[in-house]
Length: 115
Length: 112
Image (cartoon, rainbow over all chains, first blue to last red; front, side, top):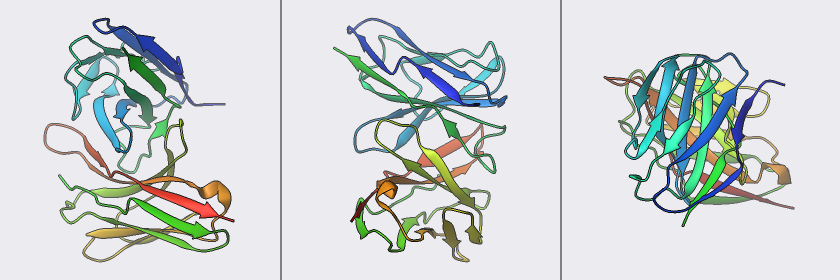
């Protein structure tokens, strides 16, 4: 079945450490996205990529970095510069050009806890 | 950018029709409206998308008035498994790139 795989489901890190969250898709989608979700809040866009080797900052990119070396993969690194990294991170993809006329397909998320 | 406002929560009973309204007063000409459903510890799932008037698919209907300042997601004959959070999304490609705004979501609780 086609879909988006995020791993791991739960991740624990010590403060001051960088951590990389994995996102892989086999939907042959051009665009990929990273969102952050905090309790009681909606999703906020961190980074997005519409094509390989290119990505753009979203609304809350500070303290995060991404790469898009392959169409299928869009890893997110949460750096030590991110002030409040504990959150639920969601990866998504779409056929192309953003979710306008192109719905987002989400993975099941990675819950990151930093202590 | 258009900000969305939804009711925080709603209760319903099995078999009833549920209507969830999203307000987006500052919606732009090229904005589309999309609704997603999310269960705990899962990613959101696409329900329906529209630009104006009415859109219907096998699970829901979306009503958008002429001024497009609000939209209503209609779920016919809900069941217990429809208990979830429903998000209204207004999206467009703003200057300099793509922008998206998710509302805070409406927590729907369906009772037997």
